[in-house]
Image (cartoon, rainbow, N blue to C red; front, side, top):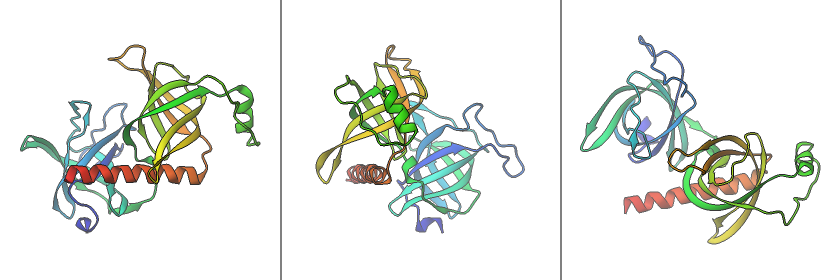
Length: 246
């Protein structure tokens, strides 16, 4: 029963899937199959039907089409759960824009917690790796990062156990490897994290010429560091939920 696991207010990530719905052709957004949208549970209508908030990007509503099907991941107090669902209606209620979704698969436990992206504003420093550093990393031989090289300041705007997104006046090339340094709170104290990241994509911000948004995937990160980052994200998310409820 979905109400045993999901409750009003739980956050959701939606990702379009390119497959037919029952009796109708799914309306998949052209070129956006891999786009992930953020939403939350507004109301549980039945054991297979939910009201969820319509996703937004900045201040713009994203009008996901009726009869399109999505992969949903729910972020609950008991962990992550995943299922497929079809949008069957959309409307405005009490000044909230709503999507009604019907589950098309069973709810299952979802283990890939590192993919949850937590919005933030964290200072970070970065630089391109030197050629000898790249060679050592790619050949998996012991290495020491070259100290004292100049670093560029940037701002992390979301972070996960799998990577991060940051904005910088410095443009880094796609597929390049970066040394990245930032601090997270651990046990009430700031802990420094030094990681290697691979640049997946770069784009210039439309409203801020000269500022570049980078998506970065962690490269060869050890499991202990990844788990610490995931734990930080979920602790911060719980703090945010408590503030919203109070």
